[in-house]
Length: 280
Image (cartoon, rainbow, N blue to C red; front, top):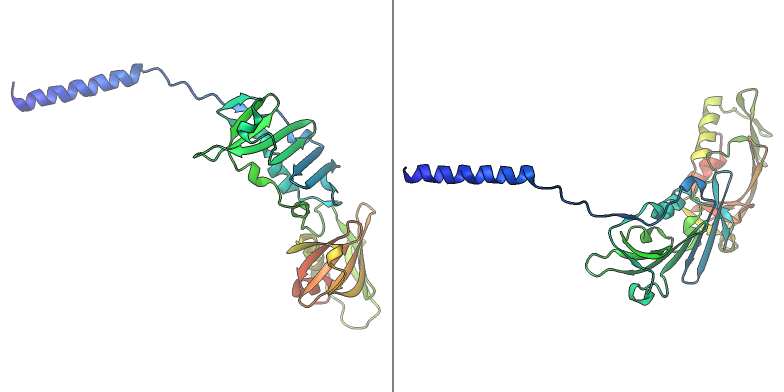
C-alpha cells in the first residue's frame, strides 16, 4: 500500500470514528434554569419601589396605572411593565437566602414589591456583571437589565401623554371658542367673526390633542414663576369627566397644567400654539 493510500485510509477511519461518536454521543444536559417568581402581570394591582430616600407607590384602577406616592399622577404604563418584567427573569444560579452581606443584600439597592411579592436588588457579580436578586427563599443571579429599569425619581414614571387613549374628548371650551362633537360632526363656535374651520381641519386638530406628548414634565411648584397665565381650557370627555388645563406661557414654552394632577406638561411654543389654535 502506498503512502498516500495509507493516509487516505487513516483519514477515512478518523472521519468514520468521528461520525460514530457524534451519532452515539448523549445529548448534553441543558443547564437548569430557575424562575425567580410566578406572577401574572394582568393580575398585579400594586407596585412599590423603595430606593435610597424614595418610596414610590403605584396602583392600578380600571386597567390604568397611577402614581399615588410621593405624587399623584397618571403613570407611564410602558415603564411600569418594564419594571414588572423581573417576574419573567430566569437564573442559572441560585443560593440560599443567607449571608446577605455577601450579595450586597443586607442593604438592597432597590426593594421592589409587586403585590405581596418581594424582590431585593443587591450587588453585582464580578466579571459577568450580573446582579444578585433576593426572592422568596433564594438569591438569584440575573441579567442587570432588570435593575436598570428603575426610575431615578418618581417624576420619571409620570405619563407624558397629555390625554390618555381612553380619554376621548367630545368638547373643548376656552374663553375664545368652543369646539364640540354634535350629531356626529365637529362644530366650531366663536364670538369672533371670520372664516370657520372646515370639519376635516377640526378632526386633525382634535387628533393632535389626543397624540400630544410633552417633552418635559414639571411639578406645579416649578411653574409658579417665569410663566404668564393665559387662562384655562376645559375638555369634556366621552365618559362625562372633565379635564381642566391651566395654560402657562413661557419664553419659548407653553405648559398645560392638569389641575387634577398638579402636573405641568411642557411643549415647545409652536406645538403649544397649534394645540390652542383650531383656526390654522
